[in-house]
Image (tube, rainbow, N blue to C red; front, side):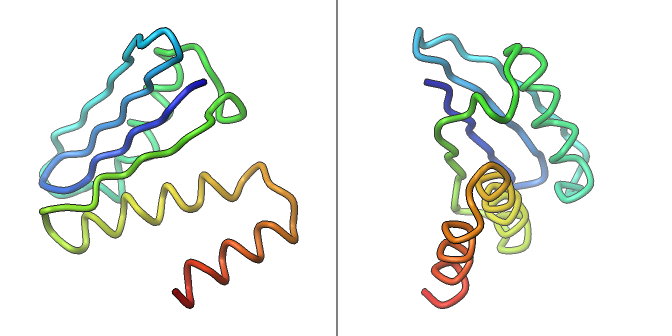
Length: 102
């Protein structure tokens, strides 16, 4: 089982992947509040280091604060988008509805 962990709470952006053997692969970008521009690069760099693809990710964890509201929103939105890539259309619509209306 592979878990992707995303942190965009302050002025930096980081991602980690922890596998079932508790090996941790980590990438970090300190681009001073450019999380929305660097998150994709950081996450895919971490996937490369762990030698896994998005299909191999079983869980996604996102930090939700404390921190800047906009930077937290970037991390949560990115994680939600990743979670919707490999699921069926009815499930995707249910999850989007839940995220929007709850």
